[in-house]
Image (cartoon, rainbow, N blue to C red):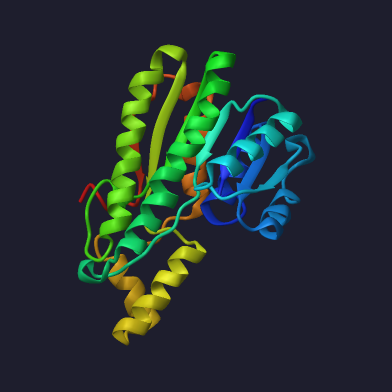
Length: 253
């Protein structure tokens, strides 16, 4: 069985990924900032996953190193890394102060770097591995009011492609999955912000977000998770350096 570390693994897309990988037989470590949330989700996973919940902030390199050491003590070397932890912020560019800009890059881009930098030596030592970075359609196309978030997620896609090229000869694949608007707590907060800022109804706010989506619905976390699980499986051994949209055709349109 492989050992999979999922950051932001307590809720939403991260929780769905942990569930999918556990169903495929992986030993699971879920990592995030809210211990209670992590423990609750870990308790839902099959006993075979021997799920371990660890509290750490992906922007804190020392905390990530300590958490990974604890994960190794429980499950051995980390074979699969899912960089899912992240945050979003919508704000006009003229109101995007340096603190907000730095915060978006820290959690979304630098956090991904920190986790990769900590875990890649495990994969080099064992002769292979899988890294999947959860980016966003904002990493494939721009949009108003999300300059910092889009810049960070474009950076994640660039990091994915460069790292994939560097690590391919070591049997380590690196891919990005780019979800569109997905039914998570983050989406619900976005809808709340639109309603508050514009006075629209919640239905109208949802319709505005879906205006460029040919399928006309939000993505389910499980749909993102199954894509990630496939990338971590044997059938995807030749897939690396890709940024795969799970977005109902939003970016392709």
